Length: 271
Ligand SMILES: NC(=O)c1ccc[n+]([C@@H]2O[C@H](COP(=O)([O-])OP(=O)(O)OC[C@H]3O[C@@H](n4cnc5c(N)ncnc54)[C@H](OP(=O)(O)O)[C@@H]3O)[C@@H](O)[C@H]2O)c1
Image (cartoon, rainbow, N blue to C red; front, top):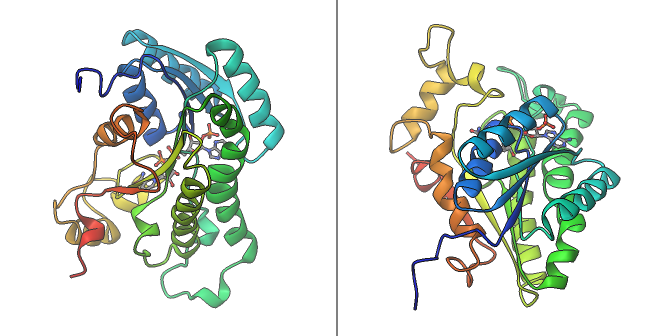
């Protein structure tokens, strides 16, 4: 067996939805550094173009395509444009997602007052736009060609629920379950479906939750570190190994239906 090209993605075209964001952007860079052509998808053109430029300056090939993950026709248009640019995508990273402030139970609040609309929007973003619709749009060509790796970005909170962020935890648990369902459904087609569950990685959307303005941990940030065996937050570049491995048809050819936690040990302990 030749192991020299285990992590070589130079025959791959990777679509990273949410490549405009913190974690998706770093995963796009990682896949680009392994040789894949990268289609950075999202709504924010400024951030998407900047990420594509960064990949190109590092010697890769990338392009930003505007797409709204919650609109099937927008994803279909992006699929056509990406295919025209680089050929049939072989890797799909579903990194669009996040929480909604109204879906977080405030201190002293309870689940009974949680607005249904906020709950629904978190499920829409993470499960529908963040997994279902992109899979429906990008997988058929992968199935036709017999090559594909779909990587859903779930969360450690989908494995063990986090206090207060009830909708987000439940939606990410659904993403993990959907990953298993799809993996089995498409197992004989050549399309593998896996998930990565990051622990805590400071990003724009959660920085205020984790850090005070003076850089010290908030109470919640401190609790998280106290529960993380490695006693630190993750760095986005620490997702590179997992995403390249799962994307690579050589390195993970017999791996499907897995959820890989990259969380400093958070989900492996209780107290
Ligand atoms: N940071 C963490 O600690 C952590 C931990 C576990 C899991 N995660 C998950 O990792 C993923 C990335 O999170 P992040 O921390 O990097 O946050 P982020 O920087 O806020 O990224 C979120 C991404 O979602 C995209 N997005 C939101 N709505 C969209 C829509 N309708 N259509 C297309 N794209 C949309 C945003 O792109 P546009 O604004 O350009 O549309 C953005 O690129 C999310 O699924 C998140 O739940 C993060």
